[in-house]
Length: 573
Image (cartoon, rainbow, N blue to C red):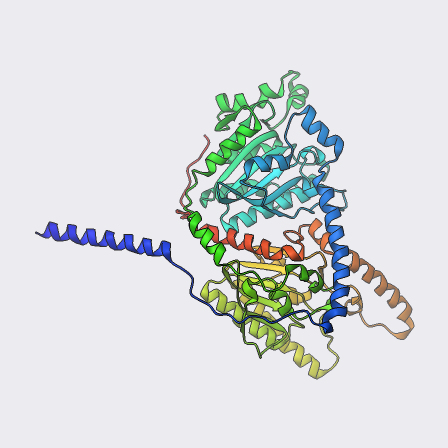
């Protein structure tokens, strides 16, 4: 009798669990009736709008010019050598075979341009996030047409940033390895420090232990340090005749021992698939290698939403009431050309709807809730100087979003310079301002929810920290082409110089002009992106799409069935 009762209780429990899981699959977000932002362009805006538009068109032309430059890789001769003599596919052709489609989020495409040691288009490797069998994956793909696949300091920095994003968002990593190792003349900037080349291998091991899959395709040379990426991966695919793995190639063997050996015999795909066991899958050609990789991704333990559910979600989404093309005229040419930030918000959010928080307090910072392609977000946006009340309001709102597990979107356009202390009353005001900003910085730094920052204008001084600048570790940070990133804005260099007597006025003016020229050059969005101070320059009209992809990517980690960190076995003996 007792056994029958226990069996009946267990059946009821299992039935309850099934009902709960079924209900979870059918769950829907709470209804919302956010207020529509009525923010049309008015005749009073026309002068500022047209000036901004002219500047945005010039910035867009620069963007297109640099895009064409980086897509040529190492140039025509290098491309001919890569495709004809070495019989290898171009890096973007490889991505077409690997990914579901060409709708992927490329990261920092302008990295490596105009550096002291020359132009390194795309830093010698493409990084980005694309779908493989419907699953968002991080890819890190060497471009061997750029300096023969040699790694420069900016290459290492770009790879590490890609891995950092993968860790934050639990993205499986796929490495397309075609590397010639480190550029030895710059070894002191590549090898010795914590965040230099060795960190790539450390991250690979740590991610694998965190159950973030690490996959590798050897589609070219893996020499010296590059050899560790496939050998530390969980599964590796290698292509016959074009893929090689060795610490030192045939020339080094001959110099050391006098023995002549071919690259294929020394470290080819057959050797590593049949003898060393360094790779798990042997591919006769590149297309087969990417088919293998796609099949490996299908074995990862994710349970993605049903396609019908995704289609219903897309149908329910509302487009903004205003055209995204109008954002070109809302991108400020300078701080003095900033229009109401709600005009920008109304062109990014679903149905141009926005539920404002503390609307009457600290009005120079706009905070509130909105949906972007169905994703609920908390928006924090500059609409003037970050005053003491505004910073306190921002601190409150950030903590509120953290409490409710709502991702944060920062739209940054900070004041060009900090206020000077010219009186006792001003000193007291600045002290309160400082404390309030410190409170907001602490709230932003300690918030555990995902954070996305888009710099739509200026990124200057301490205000940029409170608005989740690069140092505050956002999941993603993008710049509009008109953006400026510097300690103070160009034209405001006087705030950085000590006060001088009247006799030195001429010298001070010369120094100020010199510093302003330097600020103008070094604060541009393209200068910033070349040095990887951001995750890429995006066009204003593409912002909503980029935000949708970022929010989809961030959300994907909840579909992984097992994320517990366990002690991992050694994958390769």
